[in-house]
Length: 314
Image (cartoon, helix red, strand yellow):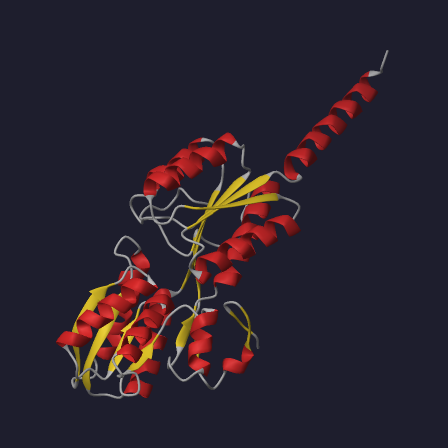
């Protein structure tokens, strides 16, 4: 028969092993918007690689901005006993219910790229500093396009708070120039094809515009395609936002003036690292739930420092 001391030691050892096994590994479910867009592809790839490096299994799925699909993917993550969920929410308000389901199942959720309109549910909301990035972009746009003339704007999906934040940031800067007039604006939902089609429509009604400012690179690249077809690209300058490889190629080709780099590779990695910390210690290691990551300009002057997808080296 074991002595009382040995029994206590055995029990303590068992508890330690149980805690260690609870910390070691498990599945981290990563849910992005649409990996057809290189931005979201990078988001998923970086998060998955970080999870695997830290000893977890990783699964990447996409909701494509559909809250019903997102809800089903959260259900799957719960069924699969995920130890954490990394989520790029489909809708600022519409995704709250999905996050609540995960929280009710005691699965910590870390949001990346986009926020939800409720704090205290997710353990972290890690996003680009969109207001700061938009101000940078607008300042660069004015420097390259000029301080007078009519211009057009392409806006992202209204369900994503980032779209309004960027547009408002542009307006704050551009409205300071009384001779700049926003002659047209269209929602193109972050999509290249829609950017092309909406640019065609705006150009037909406003053939004398001097520039286009876009809420993301995909829409900007669509606009460039439409301007090339119309023979107008040499006289109309376009600015983007994201820092995608295709946008960088367009800058090198002299077709895009600049892009605003979102540090998606940085905050996707950080989200998984904070999830790992929370699983092991019950704390994320971050000072606050909402965390902003500053953006930087990529133009012809620093394009040589673009070292990997959405990454600018020092």
